[in-house]
Image (cartoon, rainbow, N blue to C red; front, side):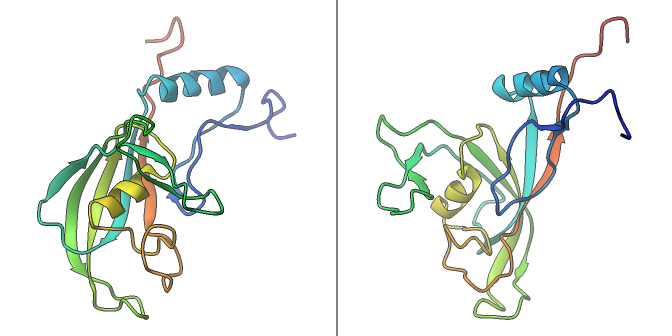
Length: 172
């Protein structure tokens, strides 16, 4: 064994299946617990990059639409905006980094797109994808929340994850 002192590797959070990027794994129960605490207390800061359809009118915007299960989805996969009391509070911040046109071959080639930085304040299932679509700018390749079935992937990437761990006792 390469690292006999390590326990089984534990994943500390999840990414949607369609999302690529940074993922935290821990080498011990203690480390996993410390990471879980940061996520639970919303101290972990996450940032994503996405390619969305359209050129948003504003360079920055925030979506605070509540979310819940899409009861019309027979597979139970999709989420939806749910402004009722049953919906869970969510907040997502978007910032345009670049505007352009899609160069991928297919139905949407030449369509206006934007590269955006996305910062979820809360961490609900499919939150970024639902809020992007709700704001009129669904993510390219997101076959659950956009009409794009041509792209080879969902253009959503976990770009930055800051984990403000406390220094071990006796270490400055």
